[in-house]
Amino acid sequence: MSDRDSFIDEVSEEVRRDRLFGFLRRYGWIAAAAVVVLVAVAAWIEWQRLGDRADAREFGDAVVAALDNDSAEARRAALAEIPAEDGRRALIAMLAADTLDTDAATDATLERLTAVADDDAVPALYRELAALKAAMILQDREEPQAVLDRLEPLTIPGAPYRLLAMEQQALARIRLGETDAALTTLREILQDGASTQGLRQRAQQLIVALGGSLDTAAG
Image (cartoon, rainbow, N blue to C red; front, top):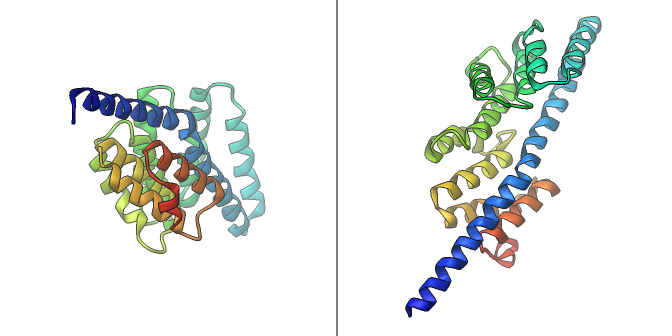
């Protein structure tokens, strides 16, 4: 290969990398939005499960009032003042992770999410959701391998957030420079019948950004 060809390949790789991380910056919020939807569903399930509807309504009203604050700091402070145990505590932790505008806020939220994820008294559905959200936040703060280790238990067959966790695994693999492994994971997501349309679309866009083939992914 000539020096000219080598130079062109290097430039092409840099352009592809820039496009990839531009995509992540532009569409990363979609994965976060998916988690917010899961939180809303979990909140509805929790409300239905509770026998004391008046208590559930009071809790819901407090959450709505807290989220009605204009600033992220005020929302987090108001949420922290709401009495909550078990599943409710998990929901508060997830909602507090809405807007992390400072390092201190991120650290406090990660501590809260980790506490929920490690609490056996909290239903597994909420523990795993908290663990997933923590891993998402740590994508830019922790070494990729550490993020992969966090995600591994969430990707076992039957895990409720398996496909979302696999998506995060692919992002961590990209950070490690393991493009082939990331493509393999993204193709597994596409081939899984449980993948949502939004998740499939994100996986396809990442495959293209990585220089992979959608024909291979479909096969």
